[in-house]
Length: 173
Image (spheres, rainbow, N blue to C red):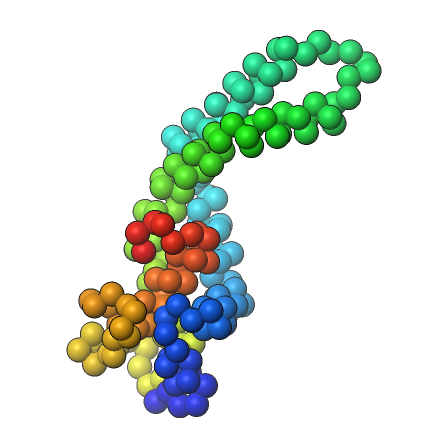
């Protein structure tokens, strides 16, 4: 049922920057990223990785502040910026955020995020299609750059999830 624009877009390779950009913008207009963000933030403060990172940062800041004597002339903004730079340079945030992503985002990717992204990608690539069901693998055409067990729409959906939701492609997608 797809004609014109959708058929043209479906012909682009899954990693095509124009295709990815258009799909990401479409996902944003659908409110999907806001929903994903809310879903992830809803339980982040209960996860061990978050609690561990918070404790490490608190200890780091407390240790740094213990070396300073408070006085009315203390430049609090300069001290705050100095601590911020030291925390960033320590690398603890990068490691901690990676662990938080592993505990909060990764479990949701395959069961929550990917199916929703793939549905929206299918709708975007085939506007006005006759069926709401995903195309069966036996009737879909695989693009040479997609995994052999996925159809091209799934490849695009996975790519979009990896690059847009997480901003990275090293999470095994």
